View (cartoon, rainbow, N blue to C red):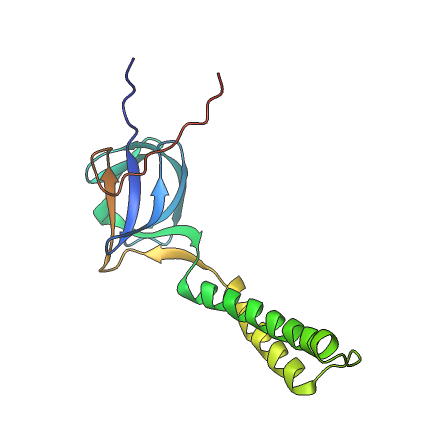
Length: 158
């Protein structure tokens, strides 16, 4: 008994998939020339359009898709937080364990660590909430023969 592969809607930035939706997934978007957001679900996918509930929406008419996603800035923020906390902890380990001194806080190390964490937190927490459909971004309906298709692994227990 064969099963047909489910179509997927992907949002590409160049050749990188930044969003993947399946029929049944919720979608929030804004059409060109309108200020209203459309909240719906993906009912069906076609080559150049999607069916959101009972409305056929051509990809070319979509101005913006709303979804939270991470960016390079979020990754830099995470690295700064880890680096700031790690720098402080390594200094403390060096002072107490390696040098055998009493627990003291080096003002320069504490200041540097606090700055790294203080700058990193907003960079990590501020996330992009939508993507405008501008040059370099495009929607594509993919099937199992596409290089952008993601084959799902079933975890069925027998």
